[in-house]
Image (cartoon, rainbow, N blue to C red; front, side, top):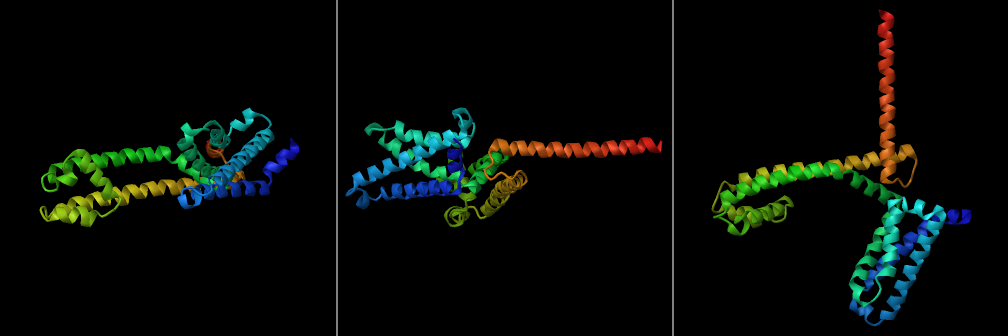
Length: 273
């Protein structure tokens, strides 16, 4: 088992796996071209089988290197890899051909599990979910207010964009993406309602520049925090649990330092008395 662990942890092994993943992605993309696929269906079939069994051997080696299946599946990344590869063996046959093709494309996501920088990025994005949830609530309130106002004010002038609440919500989504909002929505409306520009400017300032920047700010902050944690722990492939433990450790250390300072201050006051 020691030799297998050495093989799995070797940098060349990781490079080979990454190469297989991206080569498999290219082959899957080539299958979407009938001019390439139709003359050689058997070639693509055997290439697919070769990639599938190569990934199966890789998963088996990693499972043996982990020492036990329980230890192997403790990592969410390993579980993800196993499900993606095992699905290629389970969904076989004409009834599952569409499902199998979709799952084969998902193998490209396995690049995340073998590239540490991508793992850090995904871990940072997962940590933004609670903050993004609050931002989404704020954005939903903003959308609802402006949708009601827009429907009341401009229902008769431009019914194809503001005729009902759900239509206005869709229009606001188009506006917040800054996609043809001026020429397609605002200027036609201003021909009948000259002061409609105020509605659009206020919504864009609050919806696009403020809310979107909040999204970016939260994500950038978490990416920087994850990078800092990785530098402190020295772990190239941190999991979400590792990141949380590092955060707790940092908070405990800070609390201990504050308690020491407080104890020193209390002793000083007692000595002066």
